[in-house]
Length: 353
Image 1 (cartoon, rainbow, N blue to C red):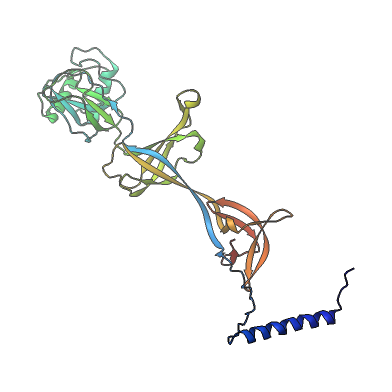
Image 2 (cartoon, one colour; image 1 turned 135 degrees about the vertical axis):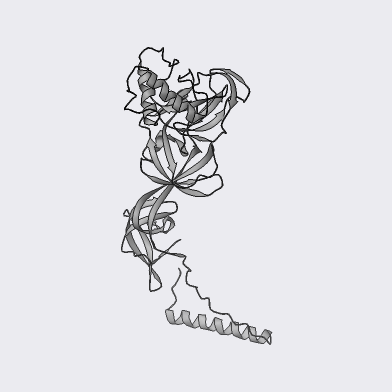
């Protein structure tokens, strides 16, 4: 049977053992070894400063900077091409587009194509009315002596001669087939489809596009709502410069390409640059869209959050050099940060394990 030693006896034995150990050390060597007491260093804490910021998410989508979809320009004139414009030239209503057999083909406004020659022998028609409207508006005919109607008269022929004189060509008083191309507005010459000296029998001589440079975006329908008309975005050009742009059109109808699992749906969006787009044409660009998720958010690193056993979250707030557990409510998450609500202020420090 074991016995428990009285506390006074046990203390004496321990003291004697300690004295003997000291005597053995001092008798066996001239050097005395002292044992330093172990000191526990305080735990070093990693901290982060609580910030006040707007939580802004940035989404990037690709687009193409150019002059929009190009299209072949109809041409009814036949003969030898004697003059052509340069690609990239801007043509306004009333300008010469190109020349066939030395005679200009002119861009005019109107709704009805000139499908026949108009002469003093022509029957009445809406195309005569349209021509006389142009002649009067251009100052080649006087409403006092040229009646704007569907009837081709000698007054109509006189006005045509004055127009031909302004173009520097022989005065015939007649409008030949193919001398005029009808459009609502001017355009940009995108490309040339013929060569000077080439014989043409109708067919497109020019390919044209919009005069306004803009960005076309095929926006995935999964991002519907990201872009809206009137919205201002940043557009990064191929040279890495950034210019602002304004969304001017968002299609309300989705286009689907492909079938089955390979099908993709998108909305067509147009963005007009508010600054210079340089000389880029049909060039890939990046559109950056900023979306404010939360204004004036009190923000801490996600890593500073502690899950509480009873539910919810807390952070360790540093006060007087010591961490204090403080419960918080969570707001928006973005990247490696989170917005919080609680007894934590911007400028405070929280522990980040």
